Length: 157
Length: 157
Image 1 (spheres, chains in turn orange, brown):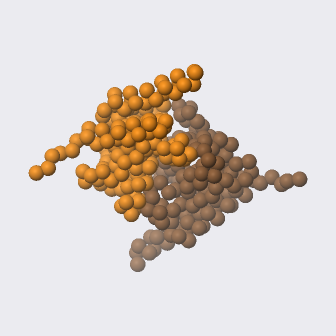
Image 2: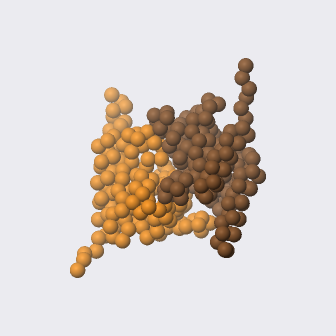
Image 3: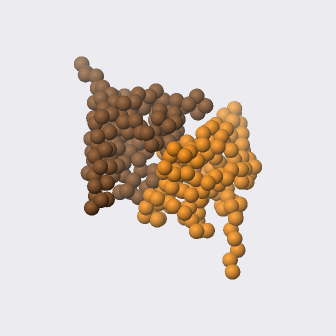
């Protein structure tokens, strides 16, 4: 007998990753890639730490999962991420053939799954994802708000 | 006295990179990132070789240039790439704050600078690039056509 693991459970793991980013003074975004009910990769934003413009949580999780699988095609996977993906990350999810995207907070500044663009369900591209937005959005957004509030306060000192 | 290096000169370097991809049986796309008239990074598509869904020429060149610069912000740079960037790569160029994009062949299947989307000049995003398309497009397209022709022929054997 096994107990079903829910989207919310995996999103909590992604939130824990986002908290790790926060502790490193990175914009707090976390991601988890799941295949067959198991976590294939987990990552958090490391842009400043790595000095890498592509080191968003989703890209790092995709690269790690592909390394483990030994192939760039990540069929049969779901990406959980605390913030709606930007165009780069949404495009990476399409390129990697990820099946499903579950994200937390909507991103009014760069959201590319729903808000500004919908790159993950576009019929002109050679792959589309099933999308679910807004899961644990309040927790994810509060982490981000706290980060930017602190940064503003520090900037004012 | 110094002689001006033209866009076409740098695009020829990108084409040489694409030819290296072709020799490795990768989709032949090459990229060069230039800063202050000098090549800061050069790369070619390595998706199959690395088993990495994000290992497009542009992403690899951005990561290498950022590593050398020691920072993710690549202000003052121009990306030369033989094929119009896909959504992932167009988004990465925006994220990296690249100033200018010069590409070769237009991509009817995934082009995200002009053809299907225009992600690099969107006023809603926090950075925009100057774009020039179609430079040495015939040479770049011929490399790609040759690759896919050969792949089809091999598939038919």
